Every structure is written in C-alpha cells, then in structure tokens.
Image (cartoon, rainbow, N blue to C red; front, side, top):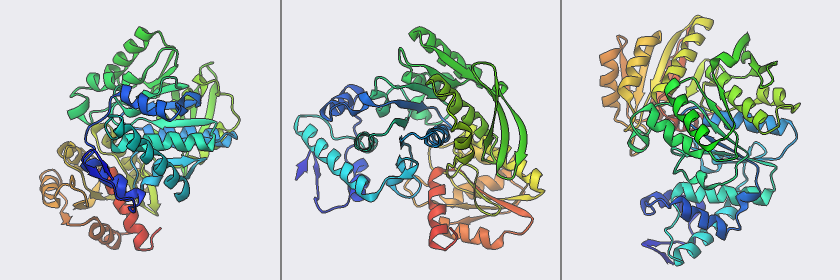
Length: 441
C-alpha cells in the first residue's frame, strides 16, 4: 500500500512504523489541518477537561503533580507527555499507569487508518508527534477519563497540541533558552511562542520568576482579557527537610497557607508543585482533599531521581535546567557531606560548552566520564572530553558507549561520592536501559 512516497508494510509493528515516520513525513501540518484530522475523529477533545501545559523546563513535572493530585482525589486521568525514555508507550498513561500494549495497538491502528484516509483526501501524513497526539485523543476518549493532562511538544503557538480550542486551564512553566533555532534566540521570543497557548476565556497560570518572560506572557494575557495567576518563588517557603525531599508551604489564592510534601531532592520541584496547585485552584479544584496525598506520592523519572543509593539521574539539557540541577546537586553534596562524580553527554544543537563550564565551576567534582549516546545527534565523546579538560581540573575519561561509561562509573564510585548523570533526556533513557539489562533496577 502506498501513501504519498511511503510504502506501508502491513506486518510491521506499531513501534517500527512510528520510528520510520520521521524519515519521510517531514512536513508538519498546520493547526487548521490538525483540526480537520480531529474533526474526522469526531472532535474527541471537545468533550474533554484538559489541562494544557507548555514551557521550557518543568512541563513533565507539572503534569505529574496534576495527575497525582487528581488520582488521589478519585478522578480518572489521561496524561500525554514527551519524550519517552525507553519505549513510546511511556508517553501515554491512564490513571497513572503506562497504557497497555493492547490499548496502544488499538489506537495506533485507528490513527493509521485515519492517516490513510486523510492522505487520500489530499492532506499530508501526520508527523511523528501529530500521530501520537491523535493516538492520545483516541485512547482518552475510549477510556472516558474525567480529566486530560496534555503536555505541549515544541513551543506552543504552532504546537500540535494547540489545536485544542477549549482547555480547562493553560499553564506555562519556566522559560529558558532552548530550541533557539525554532523558537527564537531570546527569552522574550521564546516566551512569545509559549504564550501562544493562551486562549480567550481560559484561565492562565504561569511561572513569573523571569521578568522578561513574565512581561511577555502578562501582556498577551491582558490583550486577550483572560484571568491569570502569576506565581514565583515568593509564593512558597521551605518549612522542613525530609529524606525524600522537602516540606513546603504555598500561599493559595485566598491568602491562606497550605503545607505540602514535595518528594524530590531538587528545590525546583517546589515551584512546579506550586504551579500545579495554582492550576487546580484556577480549575475550581483547589479544595480537593487528595492534593496533599497526591503531591506526596508524585513520581517523575529522570528529574533528580535517585535510581540507586547515591546515584542520581537528571535530564537537564539547557541553561535553565542546568542551573537548577547544579543547585540541587550542590545541596545534596553539602547535606550528605560527599563529593560528586559525573557522567555527562549531550546532543548536537545544545549549548554543551556552557553546560560543561557551569558544572565544572560549581560542583565539587572528583571523577568525570563523558560518553557518546546511541543517537545520530549524540556528540562524540572526544569533543565532550576536550571541553571538560578545558574547564575542569579533574581528569575526565571518555567512552564510546553509554553502557561502558555507566558500568565503569558504578564500579569505580567510592563510598564518599555521589554519582550524578546529566546532560540529556536521551542519556537518561539509555542509562535506565543499561541498569535494567544489568540487573540494577
């Protein structure tokens, strides 16, 4: 069967088909065309109560807090996030669990047939992300969830998820310089793209810690006349420390003080928790009894995640994310009175020189390893090694594979050291796969 220039193999698996989409469906459909696809599906999103989340850093964590709070309050929840770390199904969850292989396959088949039909009508085949978005809408409709949590992909204004017209609440997390080749080379330009998710009649919650981003987002919200809630670090305070993370107090919209548990070693998660809490308030759900329990149970992989005792994974891969990582890692080293070992890798297109310089100048590093990831965009270990040697007095070691680097660092790690793995979410996925293969999980 031929669709456009692509030959469909009816015997291939969903994963194989999806993995091949970027090789040939390289044209992104317009939002108007995406709406036509949704219309052909019967506009499933129109009957959904959707939390729409955009931003540079913290999107996935905000989604996780929202999901956990809603589940603890007795609601059924569908969540669509990206990217995945090991397998595509991770992007879709129903009631906090990755969707079953059967549900995944059924929605894949439905969207594949939809795609064939729309291509015959003259539309472009869906891009990889568009295809997954349609699958999410199909799954959530079939499961009849009470709420949908929808994480935007790249940007906001032209993002596939922005085809939804009536979300319950729009949320914009912290803004940082990332994907500058697509979104602009300044905070203001990137903020303007993220602010593209703001819609008339839909309350907005956003991170106001960066004044430049805040100004752009506020102006757009006022232009559209929407009610908005700007939150920053002054709207919470740390009230205690526990083995699993923080106790924090939020100031709610009524001025009252609400204490919650934030199960993370990264202080940045307090801000993400606060954004989630304010989004629930904006949706009229601030009084749910399950919020505290849900927040305390929130789990989100590869964000200062302690996968083994003293071994942490953090997917930070841009300036804002690296600054948050450094603060969290430095705090852990002080708290546990230990030095830092580091495993680092990055993909092309990221400002890896700045990331390496900041890490080398801020952490009490002892042992450093860099590795080449199994990706076309993965940087050669030799390049990363040279950069570390320019900024770091400690000796660094390069590896041609992530598996070699992980096993070496685990073997060589001493009792008085913590191992931090950082630089890319792709790296986190490879590390998790390595740990699984070698019996560490």
